[in-house]
Image (cartoon, rainbow, N blue to C red; front, top):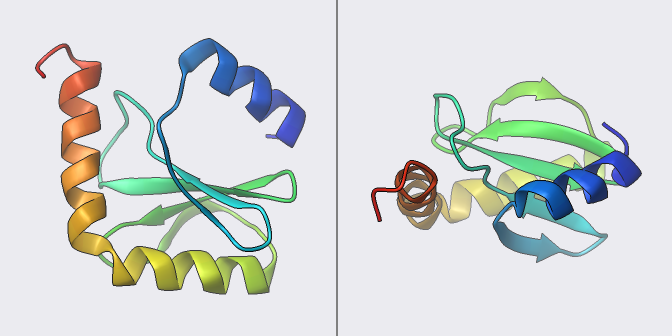
Length: 96
C-alpha cells in the first residue's frame, strides 16, 4: 500500500493513530482487525504489521532503521498497546 492510498484509507475509515515516531514512522491500530493483536506501521510509503507481544513481522516491510524504532516502541509499550488494541476492537464492534 502506498502512502497516497493509505491517506485515502485513513480518510475513509478513520484509523486510530497511536504514535508518530522519529522519521515519519506512524503506528496505528485498525478497527475490526484480525488476530493476533498487532499494529500497522507506516513509513516512507511502506507498511509492516508487527505482533504486539513479540514484535514479530506478520507481513510487509519497511526500512531497517524504521523497523528497529517501531519494534523497540512496540516492545517497550506492549501493555498499553494490548489494552488499546482490545479497546479499539470493542469500539469497532459497537461494544464501548
